[in-house]
Image 1 (cartoon, rainbow, N blue to C red):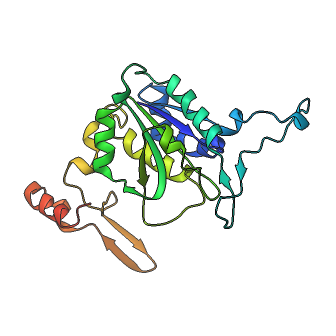
Image 2 (tube, rainbow, N blue to C red):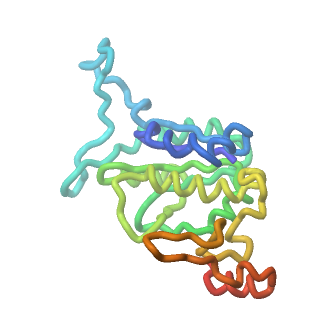
Length: 228
């Protein structure tokens, strides 16, 4: 699976995707994560040519009035175009999915993650900032509006990380032992490990007896009651 992230802040992903399971998955080439900054596709204005760090503006005031700024369409379109040129299945567009992150989009869940992991080789995730992105990008490319929850965030980077994590774990080999998928077995949100009894501030806290019984039928029933 190849993840292509359209974002102004690619460095914000480093601390998460370069640790633990996702880091190992990349090292073992189970997944690949690439970044495309729309600012790199902004033409250098004449007034900025020759400068070491030219100011490349990619936002402007929204038509119709209102607060904040809106990301311009063309730099984002060109970033998506670049990502599409890097997809594994260039001649088979059905294997590539473009996702536009929006709080008004379809709710992302584990079922969506499973389908995505099986159906696509490349997923392009478009992360907005400010007041959003000029909606004309959705006229140029076929994409699906997706939301990770009933709330608004500063940008699409956190939702993109969440989706990468959730989809990647559905790919065989990413977790090492595929049976580790809690969503594919009877699994409780409460788990315990050794020691059997812990003491804290004069109180003792024990592991539920059923987990020590060895009776797998009863254990499964107990886990089912608190299943995810």
